[in-house]
Structure formats: structure tokens, C-alpha cells
Image 1: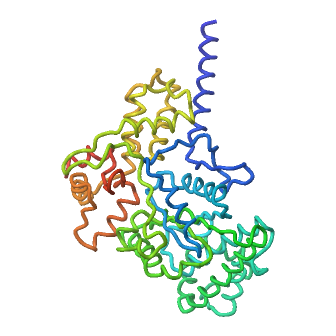
Image 2: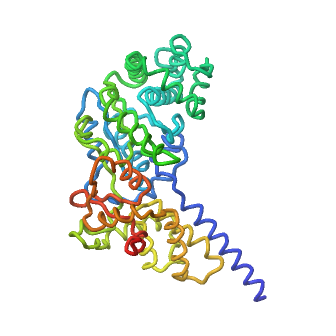
Amino acid sequence: MANDAAQLNAKELRAKVKKCMNALTNDPIAWGEEKNKLVQDSIDASLYVEHLHGSKDLIEALADQVDFDQGGGTYLFTGNRGTGKTTELMRLAERLKEDLDCEVFYVNIQDYLNLTMPVEITDFLISVLGGFSEKIKERYHADPGEIGFFDRVGTFLQSNVTIEGFTVPAMGAQLKATLQQDPGFKKKLQEGMRGHVAQLVSDAHKFVSQAVDLVRSNTAPDKKIVLIVDSLEQLRGVGDIKDVAEVFKSAETLFSGHADKLRFPPLHLICTVPPYLSALAGNLAALYSGGRIFTLPSVHIYEKRPTDGKEPVQSATGLALMRDVIGKRIPEWNDFFREEQLFRLAANSGGDLRDFIRMVRLCISQALYETSPLPDEVLDDAESALRNDMPLARDDKEWLKKIQKSHERELDGLEKLPIFARLMESKYILNYRNGDDWYDVHPLLRSSIAKGG
């Protein structure tokens, strides 16, 4: 009998672990009825934790700006990976639709553009407006101007552009797939289109005008149209430092050098951008609507910016909000953790939601083989798993040590901008905004930085 009870308990525990693991996804939260959600792979809005990023609501500020701008505008939205940008964009979409009477479209640029290669204004516009065209047809079963944007570009390419070694796809769907999946074609397309930028921009403006007319004919004559373009913050190179630097430079050129080409009145365009962009491109915010880059910081697990040479003081409020993120997904979290253990993982995530959820998942996965609550050694292993993903070169350590002391960027010269961009993109450096903007190193790196060498 005792053996049967033990087997039953083991089975129940496995079922509980499985349930919790499935609840701890990185899917964004989205609002509205399931069939109308802009992001299909999402979780219910009841799991949203309010004021997670501070009392000043960045999304409310961005929604106000869209509401105030009558003739359209382009807005930049950024933050480290793992801060919850897509969730906040979905909250923005709900606010715009339900309270400000906007028609909102959402394009995940990963579905259209290779984000590991340099991007140029041409392939960017083709991807963004091609995605916009598809979303309009999905919603209204019609193409703006009776032909989709990918089809328009395909026809133009066949008539005007020679791409050596490639046959330009005749159909828009083929062009979309080839551009996204074939790096060689994308590079040749960029080269072939450099002499046709003005024509593409002109065609893009004509398409946007037709798109707005189509949407308004299906809604209201003065309807405000908003296009959200997500995942551009994941624009990053792979390979050696030269390849990485080229991708970073291409992002700077796109959003700084071509800012004028990214405005399409009367459309309101909201683009996510890499968090390193403000460091690479000085005075970038002045080129865009609202006069600022709307930056979503890491969760405020610290009270405020510390004085030079001091470590930040943990915020009980911030840590409690991080605990609530887990509590809403798995109310039975205290079957696995003591509260101070959950606070520990929250603190050592640096306020990064994705890292936090990952460590909690790693710990719970060991619950079948450990006592309850889990021993601290399980937390040690989870933290080590994340730390091993952030190898430190000697030069990186020296720079991070300076940032840890001053909480500034510590950029000695422009030649270091690509390195700073790499450290930001990889989350070695985290950005906070309680008070003024300030920086700190990822908490899991502090012991390695202190050792030096």
C-alpha cells in the first residue's frame, strides 16, 4: 500500500510539474477575443501584472502621442530583449482600439526579414509594407489598389532590376519567402535596388495612401490607422565582430540616415528598434514623432540609481511584482519555492522577465528529484546555466567594471560603439529608468567581474 501511495504521489507531482512548466511560457500577453488577437500565440490578459515597469506608464504616453498627432507619425519603441515589449505593444493596441477608436495592424518583422544580416531601406520597406499588405487582405479580403505590395515589387523588379545569379520571383509570395530565407538573394536585392530607392519610396507612399483609403472605406472616413512593427530589436549579426558591426551600422543608417523615408502620412507607424540604437545614432529621437524614443526599461527591482561605486539597493515593491508574474501563472509556486528563493531569482535576473521565467522553469524541472521546497543548490544550478551563456572576455570585464561603478555607458570613443551595442544586445548591460536613465551589469556577472583577469 505504501508503495502504491508513493507511486500515486510521484504521478501527481509529475502532473503538477508538467502543468507549471507549460504555464511558464515566454508568449506575450494579448487582449481581446481569441479570434481577434493580433498575436495568436499569446496568453490571456488576466495574467498581466500592472505597474511592472514603474508608475509612469510608457504605453499611456505613446497612446497619447498617437492620439495627439493628426497627420500620422513614426514612433520608435525599444528595450532589452526579455523586458516584455510585445506584451506592452499588445496593451497599446488595445488602448488605441478600444479607447481611442484606431484601427490597428500588427506585423512581426521576423516573418518577413532576415534579422542576422545588414538591413537597407529597400528590403526594410519591402518587408514592412509587404507585411502590412498581407494583414489588410486578411482582415478585409481585398488588396489596396487591387494588388498586394509584394506583387507590386515583384513586377517592378522583373521590369527594372537585374539580380545576377537569381531569377526574380514572379509571384509576391515567392518574393516574400526568398527575401526572408535566402541571404544571397537579399544581398543581391540590396545591391540591385540601390539605384531605385526614390522610386521605391514613391511607390511605398502611393501604396500607403491606397491602404488607408481601403481601411477607411471599411470602417470610418476619419479612422486613424496604426501599424505596429515588432521584433526589429532583434536585429543583430552573427559570426565575427566585423559581421556584427556591419549589422549594427546598418541599423544606424536605416533609422538615422533614412528617417525621412520612414514617414508615411496619414499612417501612424510604431517600430521596435534595438536598444543600442540610441548610443549609435546621436540625436535620433529628434527625428521621430514625440521627440523621444519610447524605452521600456528592465523591471525596477532596484530602488533608484545608486551613487558611484555603490551597488543598487533592491526594491521590495519590484521584487513583489516579479513574484506576482509567477503567481498569476502558477498559483502553487510555493509548493516549490520559499518566497525568499523566488525573490532571489527575481533579483538575479536583473529585472529581465525572460531570464526570470527561464530560471524558475529550470528549478521546477528538478522538483521530481528534490525535496520541497527546493534546496538552494537547485537555484545555484539555474543561475549557473544563465551565467554560462554570458562568457566574458578580459576587455569586456574592464568595461563592465567601469559601468558597474559609474552606472553610465562609459564610452571612451566612437570606435567602441559596436562593442557597447553587442553588450547591450546580449544583456550584459541592463537599462533602468527610475529617476533618470542609468545602467548596471547583469547581476549574475558581478562575481566574475570582481575577479578580474
